[in-house]
Length: 155
Image 1 (tube, rainbow, N blue to C red):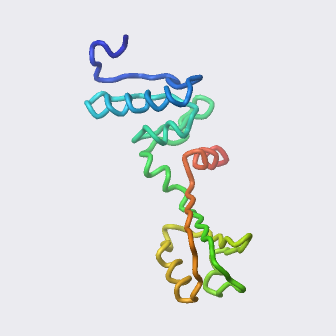
Image 2 (cartoon, helix red, strand yellow):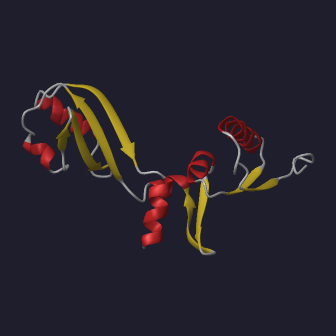
Image 3 (cartoon, one colour):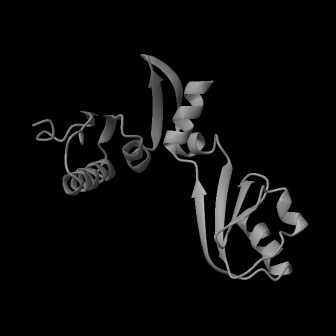
């Protein structure tokens, strides 16, 4: 009913609470579409994945107080730690250059943690190439909005 008159702003309170995955995806697509057409969407949600997927600007509340209000990009950049896991072919000893990244080897995987503001994945790959460390696969992991939320609550 709220959409019949094409409002300038639409306030949605937990729109996907209790819905199945297929309906949730359909709702997300619809929300994106009406937003592209110019409707401002105000979304309240406990599902941080939903906020990260749909929102450009995010306000984090705790006990009714604003903890942080910023763009999604700025919030996600509050934590600059990244992890990369290389599925390596063989490695007997870690090169000294990787020690500063808290590198570990487990079950054929080389796990490296780094600050994306201080180094790049390309730098790490260059170290591997220089040391003739061959790998078959790369997986990267970055903090998400849930990690940021938990960090902000601790402060």
